[in-house]
Length: 372
Ligand code: GLU
Image (cartoon, rainbow, N blue to C red; front, side, top):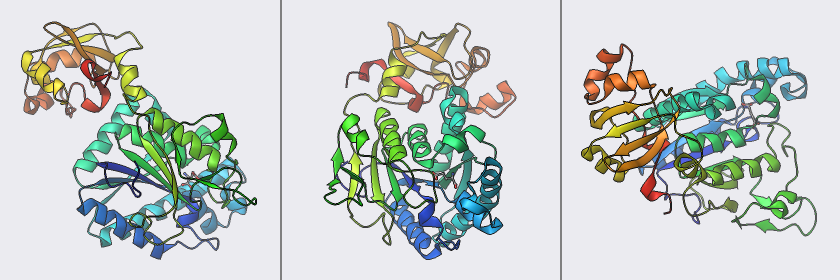
């Protein structure tokens, strides 16, 4: 990703830090947000799908409730502030995107929702559906219940996890810094780093902990941690300043952490690593569709082997043996009910709303493409 803002990826995650959303006096920075909504509309019109990870709930709620230390004096304060601020934040996004003719959807998640495999599949499926429906998901951490995450959590890392779940091509972290410097940018002689291809200890040593605005929880340390997570999933990540109008439409100084070439770690993990809990055998048509990058549909499955649970790793076998590995959207019993059946029969066979596939292509590694 050399261009900024990146226009060459189908799905882009944009994380917006608290200080860009709430001014120090507690008011919402509506004009700037309206500009971002316009940028998002332009990108949507050009065919790019956008997911917003929006901070600002705690900052906004704390000021509305008159809480000390920006609502971060105690966990209870932060949770009350988040609950109060989030409802206002959602309303603002819905209004501003609505004014651009776009529909907003809110998803509140915890890090656990994106890390625990069964829950991860749920979040990923919802995101995928929202995006294909043309909606702009607005995501934040579910701070009012997520006790651990609220202490350690920051939306930088959340954005990287969301990128992985949404199979996005890139993440932009917008905050009040325009990237990474070789030392604290307030020190004389600090120089800006335009691109990082390897996150090593020298890069980590450049980062100062702590949020420079004091409003959010993410400083450069959490941004580098986010870059590491994103890069491991094959996703490039850019840090850029949101202290300009229309930051998604204006070329500006930034730091990009370039994802390494080759199979992302997750695909590599799916392809090797753990022992599979079972297998789904498929016919020649399905084998061909998988080779072309499609999801595994029940219609092409011929036999289920083993006792696996939803979210377990399974192998997909063709005539000649394993051709892919992936996470099953169903347990073995329900998968067996669906094999050979068309999608429009699934709801009646299961008695509940079905998934789009037995194994979604985003959670599958085709064994032929690992080395690519
Ligand atoms: N989720 C927090 C909020 O909405 C922000 C976390 C962060 O600062 O990164 O206020």
